[in-house]
Image 1 (cartoon, rainbow, N blue to C red):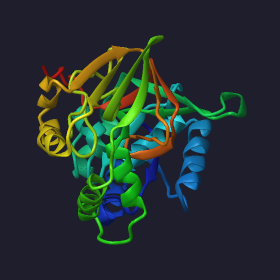
Image 2 (cartoon, rainbow, N blue to C red):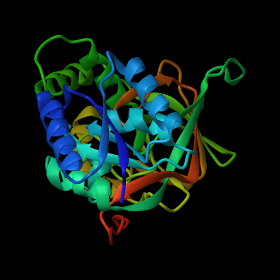
Image 3 (cartoon, rainbow, N blue to C red):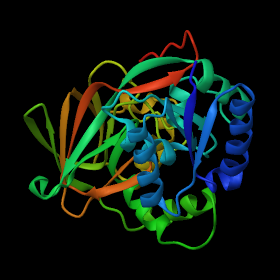
Length: 310
């Protein structure tokens, strides 16, 4: 049984649900005899510092309260260490939690898993980018890293003040469609390089991102590999026909879609930005390397990871 946990809380996750669900989870854990340290940083950098300090102190688990963004932040604290990561999913998308069979917006059940669940080793991907000699390396992602149209939409949405929530992204999609052009990507898979004009390139340690878009349906969290989905150059009307199929993972049967598999993936494209687990990473080039068993997750006993979607 987990005895001491640090709850890393995003109070704004899920339009404020993070604060409420974090409090409920803390009460449940305390009632069960678990010592709880509640960590709320003033910003992402502050939260990261608090999480790393808790891991250094030797807590039994670090628990992310929020969505994929908070799990991504907590991952930077525990990846490659022996400290397990738990989650109280309270965000909007919760893709990574869903892949692990964790209860969504059920803080009591999530707290019980933190207290009494089992540790499951899963893969994570280590990123390197920019000038490695200057220290621009060491960031991790657990789900999907992408670049191209979806990243351009994120960039646009992040600069918008209105509307709020998902409506902002819908507006950003429409606006970006009017100006976006396929990009010249260089993709390197385990040392083999290809060049493609593409609408987007996604590198998946897991299957989905963006609240259920199964962009890399063949990916698994425990196979030591990354799956790459390349959507090649298509007309905008065709793109609008293909893109919705990502919610079922059936887009990979389209002739413009290419799927590659490897352990180390390099992406390069002039002017392109990469996002991982929904968070901005860096301009390309970026290299992602799968590290088997780098993350120890608290999951329900008997959890089976998702099968490949074929």
